[in-house]
Amino acid sequence: MNRTARYALSVLCAASFVGACGEKNTPRNFMRVDRMAIPAVNTVFIADANKDDFNVAVPSNDVTAYKTTIQTVITSLRTAVNAVSGFPAEDGSGISAADLSGVLIPDVVTIDFSKTVAFPNGRRLEDDVVDAAVGLTLNRGNVLGGGAGVGDAINANDKTFLTTFPYLAAPH
Image (spheres, helix red, strand yellow):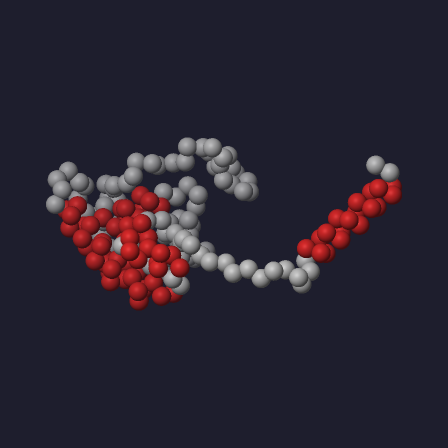
């Protein structure tokens, strides 16, 4: 490419960049249609009729709007599972439904860098958050109390995660 063509291309690219950063951008109204900071909260604890409301709600209102419902579902699930023979025993006193609802909502990912990064303190790609949520909910093998455990039997990604950014495994 000759010098004039390179110069023209450079000017065109610069003009495109400056134009893209101009003040004539059309305003957009974005709308959240789903939220799953902690997978399974909406799926398991929120009634079908309320899922859309939960998805667009502000997480800071979760405790007021959903804590009682989530506590009731946790208690009901534990009672139902306790009636099934063959399930592992509960983890001692474990975590109460009231305390657990405080872990699950607000439905946001939080992280405290002074603690180990693993669910529920942040979330690594390899964390099995569904097993953790099931274990916590049923109080069997929960991440806060140990025990025999229950889960979904999917214990790892089927492709190896990368060791450098973007860390995600190759697409399927």
